[in-house]
Image (cartoon, rainbow, N blue to C red; front, side, top):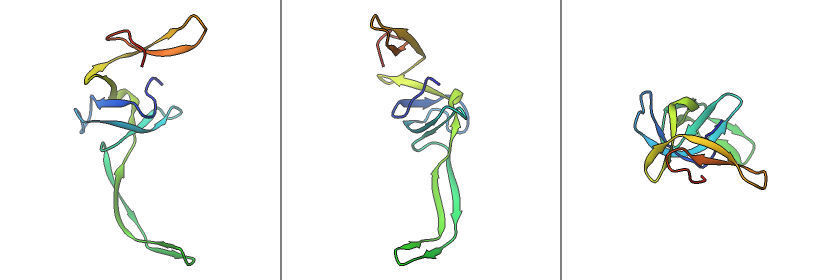
Length: 104
């Protein structure tokens, strides 16, 4: 998966098309990413009272849901770019921008 945690991305498909944000969680096994402020979902939680300090407030919580990695594209200097790889002379593999050729 070419998108990593901390990358600045733009959503290119779906209900949040055009939204930008930072990747909070990257899950390569399921090919999903969680982007801050994108795909907001509501979760209902029950009030629990476990122990003296474990009191949890109930209600509706709005948080980010995962989206497929193919629906996001990396941003570089405010422009969308594809991601490629290059192997340096010392043998390390680095991600590069296909738009400019610079290391990410």
